[in-house]
Length: 115
Length: 111
Image (cartoon, rainbow over all chains, first blue to last red; front, side, top):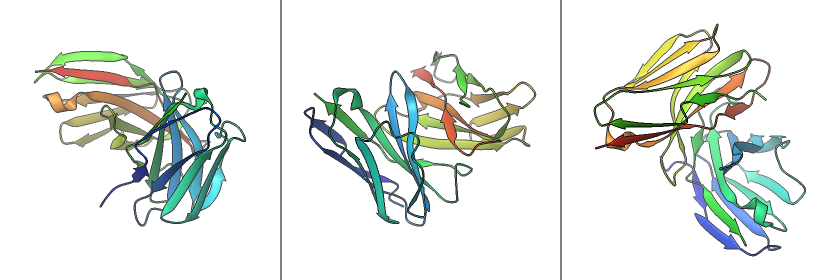
């Protein structure tokens, strides 16, 4: 079991640039989550997919953020245009079963720095 | 929003000692989960305890849940240097489905 795989591990970009973060969930898991972690706000849920369908995107900060899950083995989180306040560690997690009543399996995150 | 609050914020202990951290939450829950995060890594699930359970064990970990006090504790026995990490509690409220994380307890185990 390779676990949840995220890429890249680190991303440094300039303000205004487009950033795409990628995630491969654990095979067989049907729920996928994107979280953002900062010192100030802790862990925040951005969006939750079940069976590739976005169920709850109320945590997406603004229209600059978008997420897709074209199939069961791949998801992207895109920020366009990026801003310095988007600097954070972005985690993808997957689980088996609907919602949050099963343990989440996290990737190692993408550390995003926007200058 | 339903969010656990861990106490203490930071804990420093000697290898071999026990470490105890607490989590308090605000409304009734479906379950409570504990996660560990090593520096620069993702969160790792440790234990899930349901609202009708009072205690669970996993190796050197013991979790208790007191729904009347809306609190949970995580005990790490015979700590090791490898236990140095941040520990988070997370709750799923009864009337919601989202998992809300607390701010975490940073545990340092000194050799």
